[in-house]
Each structure stands twice: as C-alpha cells, then as structure tokens.
Amino acid sequence: MKNITIGLCALYLFAILTACSKKPIDVTGQIFVVTKSRENIKMGGLEVLVIPDAEFQTMAKTTVSWMQEEARAEAQRKIDSDHMTAFIREVMDMVRESPMPIPELKKVRMSIVDESGTAKNLLESALAGDLLRKSFGKLISSSTSSVKVSTDADGRFAVPLKGKTWFIAGSQREVGDETEQYRWLKSYEPIEGAATASMSVSNESDIQSEAELYGILSSVIGSSGDLQEFQKVEVSEKMKSMVAKHRVLAKSAKENAEREAAEARANFQGKKAGEERDWEIAPGVKMTFCWCPAGSFTMGSSESEADRNSNEKQVKVTLTKGFWMAKTEVTQAQWRALMGNNPSNFKGDNLPVEKVSWLDAQHFLEKLNTKIGNTDGGKMVLPAEAQWEYACRAGELGPYSGGKIDEVAWYSNNSDFKTHPVGMKKSNAWGLHDMHGNVWEWCADWYDDSLSGGTDPSGASSGVFRVRRGGSWLSGAACCRAAFRFRGVPGHRNSFLGFRPALVPSE
Image 1 (cartoon, helix red, strand yellow):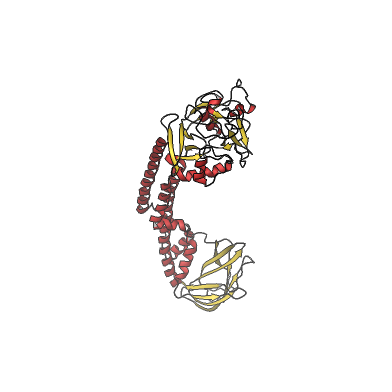
Image 2 (cartoon, helix red, strand yellow):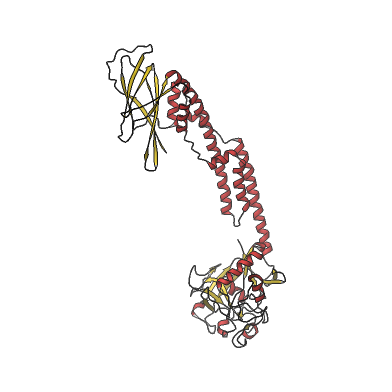
C-alpha cells in the first residue's frame, strides 16, 4: 500500500476580514469546502475528524510518547534481526564451505528462531512495521471528544468552531493492484465574521515520514526532539547471548562433522591395493570388494598394441580418491537377493547376471545403497570408465591384466558360447576376476569417441550411448583388451551384458 500524506492548506476566506481578536471566537455553522487538485480523488462522503486544540494537545502528547517507544522497539527489533541474520549467514557459509553435509547446522539455524520470541516474530512478520501509518492510527484512536463530519457530494461540510481547531481526514483510491491512501492533518483558527473557508488537497505531501509527523506533534506540545535519537540502540544482551551460544553449537557441529568425516575416510580406505572387504546384502548373501588405491596411469592403448582402435588414443589420468571395486561381476544370486527376480538367459546362482540394461543396473544400485550405502562414507555406483580401466589394469600396461587371455577371460575361443561361474579365471594383481570376458560391464559415462584424461575424468556430459567395457563370452580376444571401448543404448539388454559396482567416497 502506498501511503501518501495529504496536507491541508487554508485558502482565502470568502468574507470581509477584520482584525484578529485574542479571545476565542465562536463561529457557528462555518462551511468548509474541500477542493481537489486531482480529478480522480473523490471528496463526497469523506469523513473529517474535528478536534479542539486543547484535546489535540493531549492527543499529540500521547502519540509522541507512543512514537518514541515504538521507534525504540522497532529499532531494537531491527538491530537484533540484523545481528541474528549475520549469524545465520555465518552458518550458511559453514555449510557451503564444508566438503561434507552437516545436518546439525540446519538445526542450529532453526533453533535460534525457536528459542527467541523476538527472532521468531522478526522472521515470521514484516520488519518495517510502517510507523507512519501506525502513528496516524494512534493519533486518531487517542481522541475522546472529537466529532466526525462527512462531506457532501461537492466536498462541503459545515461545523461550528470555537478557537483553534484541528482537522484530520483520510481517503483512498485504487491504482491498479495498489491502494493509495491520503491522510490530512491541518490546523485552522477562525477569523471573526468568516462564514466559509476552503481547504485543498496537495499532491505534495507535507508529511512524508514518521520523523516529520513526530516533528509536527512535538512542536504542538512545545517540545523539541529528533525521533532518530530513539532509534540509536545496540544489540540486546539477550540476542548477543543467544547468538554467542549458537555460534559455539555451530562450531562444535562443524568440528564433529569434520572429525566424523575424517574417521569415515580412514575407515573407507584400504591399507593396500587388493585388500578385500565383504558386505552382506541379504542373509547369507555377500559381496566382496577389492581396494583400488588413488593413483595415476596411462589410459588407452599404445600405438604398437595389436588390434588397436582409433578411440583408444592414450591420455594421462589421475584418480585422486581410492575406491572399492566388486571382486566379480554381480551374480544371479546377488541380483535375486535384492531385486527378487532373475532376468538372465543362462541360469545359475554363481553365474553373472545378464540381460540387464544400464538403467536396470541403476535400480539395483539404488537398492544396494539402501542396504549398505554410505558404509564408511561411501556410495555404490557404476564405475567411471577411467576407474574401470584403472582397476582392470591394476598397474599393468599390456592388453590383458593378470596373465594371458585364456588365463584371465572367458571369450569366444574358450567359453562354449555361454557364461561361466564368476571367479574361475585368474585374477589381476588387485584380486579382481573376469575384468576380461564373461559379460560386458556397464560404466557410468556417456560414450565419446575420445577418451577423457586429466584428474578424475567422468567422460562426456551427455550423449546417446553409455560405455561398455571388458568384452564377453561372445567376444573375440581383441574386444576383451583392457583398452577396448564399446558402447550401448542405456535401455539395451542382452545375454552378454552385465555389470559390477564400485564403492566410491560419497563426499
């Protein structure tokens, strides 16, 4: 609501002026004409409060005292609010700067509101308070013997006057979605013999702020002062104490979270490459993971490698965080324990689950994370392509890791064109089985013809195909190489498609 204070100006009187008398003059039936400076302001039916000067003096004194207290209270609420808001910003900065979530900080931020009635009111209601509007209301409500008169269609009203008199009136109009309010405050001292007087509404408000109203009322009661003097307050001791207490709580929560995160990282990491750790995903069903330490390697194939493809151009990769890789491809028993079904073409509890799409693998991982996710600060995911090749190579540079192709892989030359129980072939140096052959393994990345190098690469940001790695029982030896890259539509299923999860740091 846009508040526009309207001043009343005394215009020329339509009577012969005589010398002013110092004694009160009783002018009965004096007619006032409220003129308008804007055609769209309606004056008909306007209520005018007519207040004798003696009563107005009392009203002014009451309102001045109230404005002082309200200004002080509002200033106190504002400075307390600013102090509390600054603290909340501190907490939010802690949240943003922290590498791990700190749920307790949200509780700290909310509890200061719950504990402080002042703070709660500040956050749940408007801060400004509109002191000018409330001060006018206070001024009018303090009247005890004033009378109200209404203007006729022409904006006229008649009232008997005896001595100095004050007029207060108000009007409003709709302007689009807003309501403009007009408030008038004007004194008038009748002149002997005057039968009529005219008051006009000015577009330029005489009172544009609570400070100006305060100045007028202060002058009426013969005092001087500046409302701003009552707005010079300091943060309350209550608010200082609350903020200080919650700052300690916030700092403690941050320190505890950092300590817990450090402990989780320590628990998450394996002591050496290839160290094994088991997680039970259902009664009697476990998954074994092998530790792959952080490190750097050359991804892709050398120019001298047989059967090399153009999408295997070598890049340098650094993985800054170690991770756990499933020791084998997900088996049908493991899949059934979480999903309750078995989509595989070749049946057998210890055979790799197949005929699963990239999207199917994501559903499995969601359930797996519900069971054992956030274990020691980790989460179950499909490995990034760089993580997969890093784990597959386990420090070796050749096309096959852990031995010759027939020693490490079930592929077209030895598979009898079917899957085989996981873990039957020789593992690589980090204890991982079937990284070559048996079933293709989905990776997290979108496929791109060029490898992504650098630090912790995650492949293309979008695409049509997802990466598949490792070859299968149907693949030739060339397709089972550590560097060989293939692709697939995320929704595609086939009897040579499976996956293995990785447990990576959740932060």
